[in-house]
Amino acid sequence: MIQPIMKDPLFLGVRSQPAGPEDLQVAQDLMDTLAAHREGCVGMAANMIGVRKRVIIFDNEGTDTVMFNPEILKGEGVYETEEGCLSLPGVRKTKRFHKIKVRYQNAAMQTRIKTFTGWTAQIIQHEIDHCDGILI
Image (cartoon, rainbow, N blue to C red; front, top):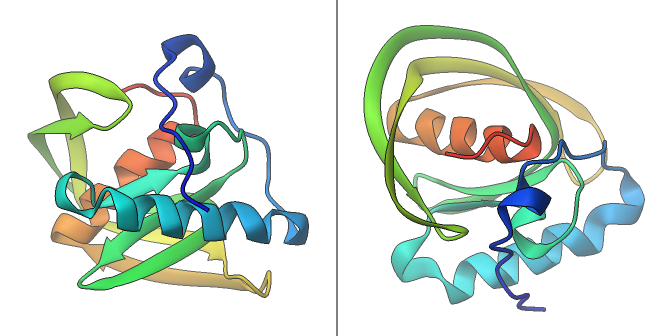
């Protein structure tokens, strides 16, 4: 179900709790909400729809990918960029890694480790910041 976008910086500034199998509906709501905002959005975290759980979705080279409990294990190649967000007005400067290694769980709650680069890595880092209560 498409959910409203959370814009309260106090809510967004709180670290999210670990997600579990009971949060599969949150992932579906993220998919639906991202699809509804496709023109101006390439990723979302659960707190952006008012749920403080560590669930993210992102455009992975044309395929929407959901991660539960994502964690960056390693980052390489720092660069500075500017990012916007549906939850916050404007664009802000931030630093990102060009290449990241991420540990996460899929929808079956199986742990996976995968490396991402470039634009996809940047999106994932932005969404993980949301999970950590970091406002960009």
